[in-house]
Image 1: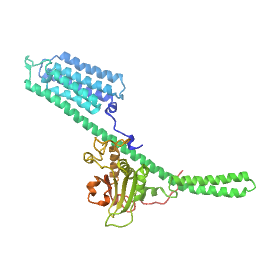
Image 2 (image 1 turned 135 degrees about the vertical axis):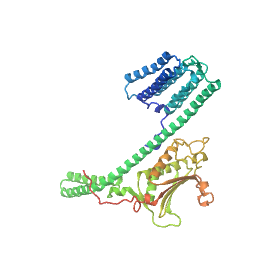
Image 3 (image 1 turned 180 degrees about the horizontal axis):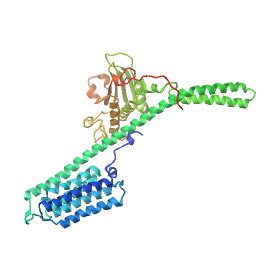
Length: 464
């Protein structure tokens, strides 16, 4: 599975995640608050309200909750339409209760924003906009149409018209602002959650491939001796069966098949090496492994290696971790996708750092995107007016996965464009596209002398 197989879930899909039990518990909380407010208005302040009608409105919510509790299983998850219906019911129930208790003269009128915030966070954009429109319409209707608030002496409690208008305007602004704010925050959290899940899946896939390589290598190592014994025995049988040609041919066939088994195992793994050897490799070998799937895609990948200026010494043997291989592979894929014809991959090292730099001859990052590279689901490198490469599904998730995995291994990533970095260097004149540089402290990635150095143990036979 590639990172392009995993995308953000739309709001309509997320709307199907909410359990009915959650809505029921929230509604019980709202009912308790409404009953408490009515009791305080009656027993403490003695307000003259239509308590019978108010009780009927609250009772409707109680009946609806009881029906939902006993008619449906606790683990039922509501569809988008069912969630929308539940939120609209709560909104209209609250609006009717406000109509009976003074409209926008009631200080609790601000609670009409609550269902809008819930819908913005949990439902699709279309449903959230519909709920917000209903809330604004309900607040507008409550300005002229409502039953008055009366004290125990029958005096109407009313605020000045300017304050009524202020309450209405505050509700409208709150509906719009809080709806958008909740929507953005929820979308950001959902995108990050999806991206992290995709990262974990990519890492798990690469880890399985690495584990499989280790198992094959160990199996090839352990099966070498019995296969050699089979071949030797078959050769001796062939010599002893010279007088029986048909059986001699069978013995030779056994020897040939033993050779074939040996060749298959060698092609599947690195024969004769213990699993720990698969966990490390020279820097250039890891880079070549990462680039291998993209070398036959119609672009030329140039590999360069050597110590950093002012340093010498052989190239390091680094940890061959799945996150390193997969992260570099995603970066190289991104360069191949946007390059015109050439990609340059440089592997450099010194006594203190190890770096891999990936450059291409494409158009580079646009100013609007370069500051957001590494965020999930950034869809394009260039601006919206330019055509996207056919068949390419967006670079944001792939770069997010690469950045997350490589940073987990201890690397720091930097992004730039060729003209910005090498404007005065004619040797890099062709490298006009994007530049991605991955730098590790050598002690974090070196497999022989670093903090994570691999200690080779004595080979042990497979336990069957």
